[in-house]
Amino acid sequence: MAARRGSSAGAAAPRVRHRLSAQHLRQPNSRESRSMNQAQQATGGPRYRRVVLKLSGESFTHAGERGISMDEVVGIARQIHQTAQMGCELAVVIGGGNILRGAHFIDKNAGIQEATAHYMGMLATVINGLALQDALESCGSDTRLMTAIRMDGVAEPYLRRRAQSHLSKGRIIILAAGTGGPFVTTDTAAALRALELGADILLKATRVDGVYSDDPEKNPHAMLYQNLDYDAVRQQNLRFMDSTAIAHCMERSLPILVFNYKKDGNIQRAVRGEKVGTMVGPRPRTNGDGTPVSPPCADRKSVV
Image (tube, rainbow, N blue to C red; front, side, top):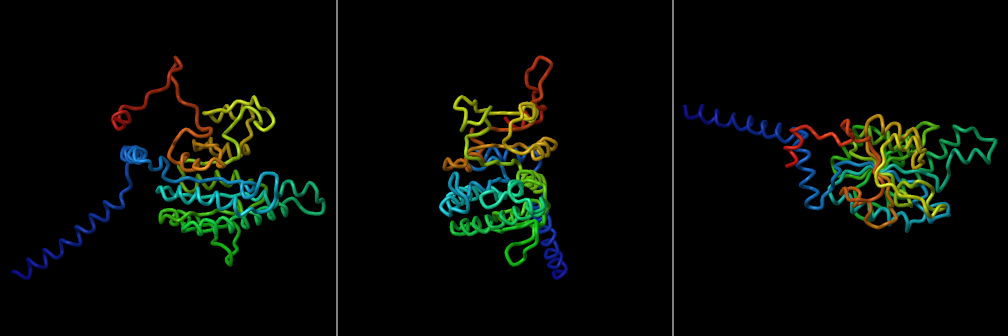
């Protein structure tokens, strides 16, 4: 009898472990997620759990120059590393315009097909990705360079599940070679990757403070917008990203934050949800009198 009682007690232990494992794997519901976000913000943590950061190729060099300037790359890498240290999962999509921009290359080279020029531009993003990877690892980050075109001796192939696994393990992933096909900009690639990976927001890093009514480098009276909805962007033909990228974000209500990465600490501020740059998102729902629609009662209770 004693032996049976012992075996019975021993059999109960695995069931307890199983219940704990199931509880650990359970995803938080919307009310718990909001509470977690509020607690993280109160302690200076990230507002956004997972983000896709879009960097242009021009951010890898000094203004007006070509090629790669490693002091610029290391400066960006430090900001990205510090942001990841906050607990944010970061995927970085990079352009290649500092080396070669496919659409512009064909204008001066009639002997090359447009699709070929685009593939050349994709390879330029891989070169930038290698530079950013080394810069990040010199800061102490764990990284993975993933490409949409297979080049096994240089980087991992992009697979959505593998990318998500890297992010969940705290690795910064660098996504290069666009989508792997021609005639698609890296802005559109960033929007698609953000949707694929379940990002909370798409961060568009630029050399200016956000979206302006006109080019601020040419018009000193251009007005900086703090908030915009997708419809206003299309109606005013505001060009901070290509129209296809904006359409993808609009269709899935993915917010876009356009901000100045040149101001040190702005990537961290953006991820913490501080007022920085221009937030682009869906138009707020309103009542007949124009006042904002109140959230459901359950949401109001969860915020209190």
